[in-house]
Amino acid sequence: MRDKPPREEPPRRPLRRDLPRPEGPFERLLKQRPERDPAPIIIGGTIAFLAIVIVLVFVFSSLLSGGDDNSSDSGQTIQVADGVSGRLIAMPGLPPGLAAASQYIEFEAEEAIPVTIALPLTINVSSDAVLGFYSLLDGRWERIAESQVMPSQEFASQGCLSSETTTGRGLVSCGNFAAVPVNLAVLQVLAQTYTVAASLPSGATLHADARPNIVSPRDFSPAPDGSVVGNASTVNTSDSVQHMPTIVGSSVDTAGIVDDILADETLRAVHVQEIVALVEDEGFDGIDLEYSAVDADLNGQFTAFVSSLTDALGQSGHRLSLTLPPPSDQRSAYDWEQLGVLADYIKVLPIADPISYWDNMPDGIARLTEDVPPQKILLVINPFSIETREVARAIGYQSAMVLASRAVVREPDNPDEIVPGATVLIVAESLDEDEGASPMAWDENAAAVAFTIGGTDRRRIYFENSYSVGFKLELVQAYGLGGVAVSDASAESDVANVWGRINELVITSTVSLNRPSETMLMPLWQAPGGGDLGAASGTNATWIAPSNGTYPIILIVSDGDRRFGQEISVVVN
Image (tube, one colour):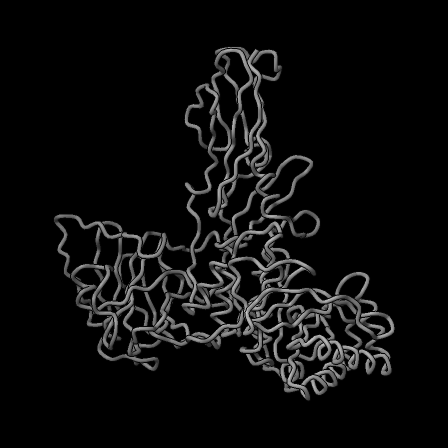
């Protein structure tokens, strides 16, 4: 294995919640004052800006005159407005799936104010080019705003609006930002064809919206004698979809069996023979091995086993997929450089905890692409939501919604005091801050919608939905990975439907990065049987009891994708 270059510790960035964020793709921030001259002011022939209300517009005019990555202005710091300066420096290294489309600028700003920024493009923009504004945050490129391409003259006269001219040279890319970013560049997403693998519980049916190239029912497991046990599921797919079932050797019961097989040369040979026989007898296109908990001391044995299996499968034209954990600083059984040569696909399992995911997963993928061709790497998407307490564990999507939508009467304390005209305080037990909880909100550190249940049952719930999956799919784009693998693509499981975002990536070679608004996440209250609910929104509600009877009160919550309601009954005496 080749020696790795020394890794420099990247500068720590602030928490995601403290970073400047876009208000949304193409959201209009420009509101011109009548007395303001709309023409841009040229400063020293280098930077142009237009002040409109509190919106600052920057154009690096040195680039418009034909600058490139080796511009003579590189390193020069220029004051572009009161309290805002910019500096052109050399473009940092880019992951395989991204290419530079502008120069790289570092900004310094004394305060956070909304801005519209336009950067001149250094490429000939084609009709199918996918561009976006990116910042380098903690060593990882993150897309922070959508790109609007237009001629510089149009931008100077009308601001960042749609244009009929979006191809060719001499154009700028403009975007809207909630605050001046710490650094910025326009990057192009390199188009490619993505592979989609769908894992299924044994006997399950494929989700109606799934469009996989590979299906992998989890039908088999290794036996102590080296054989393979289990029965093949029938999955209704087109002939073009590869059938590569999974042999699951990562559970508490099977991980030790895998280690015992690998440690014994005779058992390894038997296991190879049994796997090849299974593939050929059942007419599979290949096999997927989820041997993700192999003892680190068996590194050489695991590589030897995979090498023998690859040779045997290759003789009959069958494929091998490995489902493994991401690289880390810990010793492991996985010689990535060798495995990258031997396997057709390597599926990278996710880190369960959403905060740890973003702290560690990008670096793990970056390391993996140093040894494994990126086109062979499939990022595993776990569609289950996650709850964290002592450990992170999966929770069903609807189960999480049921927890979020629990309502309870808090006042009056005595139910007998609920009489006509009484003021009744009803709270969202899992969301109201007075309950020790936290409301549904976008968590920037986890790139997901989350809430915290208070009290003795304190735990935090993170929703995996179309929003959170979009940010994970950005890793596939940025690192030029071969595609994605969904760990449970069944129609029966309690998970959010993430297939819209995955299919978007496959069809368009890009994915939208959106966050739900606070309004979308605001709880709502209904009293269909009568009684005044007042504002009827928020984590608590005041209900004026009507005449005697039993009345339904409904709490409706949303993660931005779907709304769920849960009803309680209140008796008016």
